[in-house]
Image (cartoon, rainbow over all chains, first blue to last red; front, top):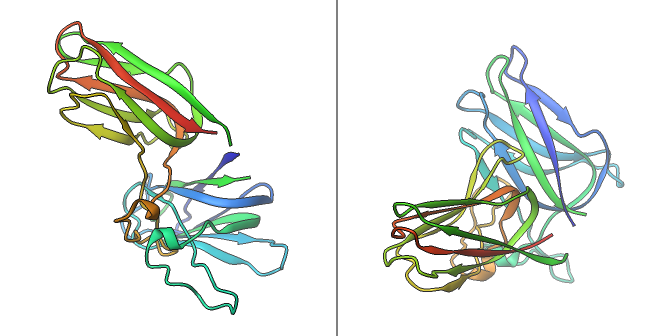
Length: 124
Length: 124
């Protein structure tokens, strides 16, 4: 089933913001809708998963100079039985990344007291 | 996931018609069946999602001179972890786009008092 979670962010005087989801989620990332809102040009953002089952946080998507609203259908490399990454240059070679933990959106260089964020779509 | 459908059929006035779905939907666009009906040759149509969770409307399909009925299995580009679009030249590189809001079909240049539209198939 497709589900969505919105992560709103309001930057501080330094242009930074960190938004954590309110609960842990388990599923496969389908898409991320980036909402530029009122952020300054040059804004960066990192979507990650924290408080994971393994204890190791990991990054799902890194955006730099994300100056426009946009959709990202993020897909990860696949591997063979020896752990070697497959070609993965085309979208059909890749697969949806796992979400197993708490989603976190970190915004940087967004300007003072600006708002925006992301809607994260996942299959649960 | 189960597949569902919603019909967006309209009657033009001065060549144009806007048909808005009766409710918001959350799912993945599987296919669009364009029904030209009695619409005049040269008709154009834009299928979009309005009143979205993000507040940003999204265009799903743009048809120009859609003079014959037809099926469109729309698929969107995928991206790497840095947000860069993958090659996407082959269908297998692409995925079903997200629907999260109210579907809207805007018809233009369809002739006066003509009838036609689309049936939207989606997975939820």
